[in-house]
Amino acid sequence: MNPMPTLSVVMITYNGEKYIREQIESLLQQTYPFTELIIQDDKSTDTTRDIIEEYARKDHRIHLYVNPSNMGWNRNFITAMRRATGDYIALSDQDDIWYKDNLEKKMAAIGKSSLVYCYRCLDAQFTTHGTLIRKPQSDFESLLFTSHIPGHSMLFTRKFYDSIDVWDERIAYDWWLALQAHMHDGVTLVREPLNWYREHSDSASVVMMSKDWERTKGNTWQPYVYGWKAYCDFNKMPVWQWMYAYIRDHTSAERNPIPHRMAALLARNDMPALLHLCWLTMKYRAKVHDRFAGGKGCQALINCIRGFFYPLIWTYNNNTAFFEKPIVK
Image 1: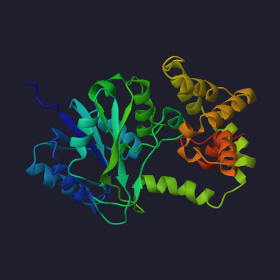
Image 2: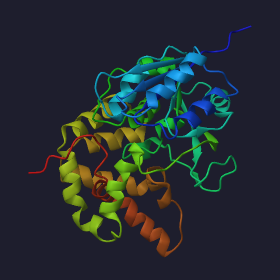
Image 3: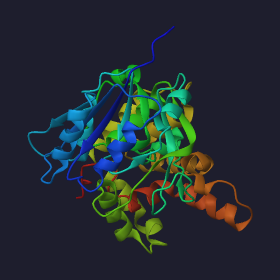
Image 4: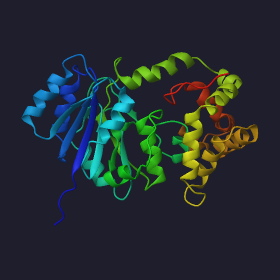
């Protein structure tokens, strides 16, 4: 009889004293037992570390590491994952609550894929029967433009993680994991929420995304008029050029025909390439953004227009795609 695969859970923390007890308790109640819980704290100034140490004294699987200085959440996750030793690795935020069968259902679903993720519940109060369910899109074409799959919903294989040859801290860790998974053995989805995602003003992701929400709320025509400049500004960024050239060079026209073509066009800096990219995002708009799928009559026409202009809409509306400001002359 084959032994049960080992599983590491990796969590990062920073000033999470309000919610971390609930999250650790939900991890300890998992029906699939984890081998270790790696917690890397980013120099919290509240009682977060005291709470973790309290749990670590009771459970030998919990290991606390403290950064010598504050890294920020992206670098903290990238470095914390290196500490994991399990055959599989799951990622956890400090402020969610996992359903008891979170790990069990992901382990059952992953199969031969590199990575599995799940839906998440966004109801205002904790519930296992939520009505507000976030269902992120995972098509490779869509992930070329933005990160839809949050890290706290991911579980992936050790073999896949070890195969990632480079990390760039200018790119969100979960975006890079999702892109890399498509370049390896693919992504699997558990089509149900397996954790309750807590939205609050101290959340790093909420703080980051709220900047874009505040800046772009009420926009209608602006992305179509000013999106060209935004696209050109982003296209000059070294991290943009590096990332899309990497994807172009690590995909093939045989295995990933459309993402390969799109990445090659995104890596170029000329008008013909942009027009070709816009044509592809219109033609494959359902894979680029599921809101552009289907429709009849006028709605179908609107979806085609939005699909064509999506590269401009995306860059205009998104100032937080990379941890590097666009080069603007």
